[in-house]
Image 1 (spheres, helix red, strand yellow):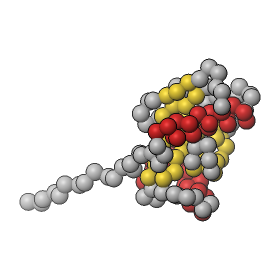
Image 2 (image 1 turned 90 degrees about the vertical axis):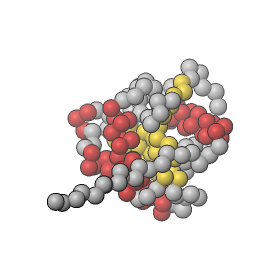
Image 3 (image 1 turned 120 degrees about the vertical axis):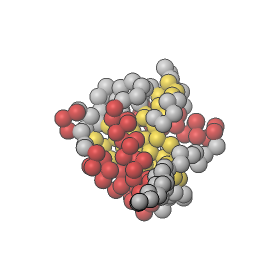
Image 4 (image 1 turned 45 degrees about the horizontal axis):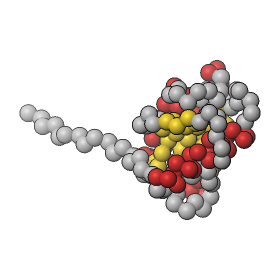
Length: 158
């Protein structure tokens, strides 16, 4: 009789924050302000970013329309290249980077947010890095894709 050994569950990346609560909140608020200042259009390309919110980052744009959206393998490759670039940039703590998508639309969960979140979890896990946070940033606020927490401003004053 053949005995099967239990298979341990795969290690999942730990999502933790490198910044204290108030500094982190201010950084994400500043990230929303940066997007508002940069984009006045209603529809603009989605941008995937790896780095520190309101600080150093590396990013790559992606067309927003569904016909030209990246598939899962290409999303993995894009995030992998961004993580490599982030580590090579001389980041203070390359093991605790955040990732986010800056995109048009409402501050509600979107399929594209989940697609990029999955790619980030895979890449950060493959590199044995800690994913500090993953959020969707819009012109009106941000959404934490992992927890569902969100913050929206009607008039953002920085």
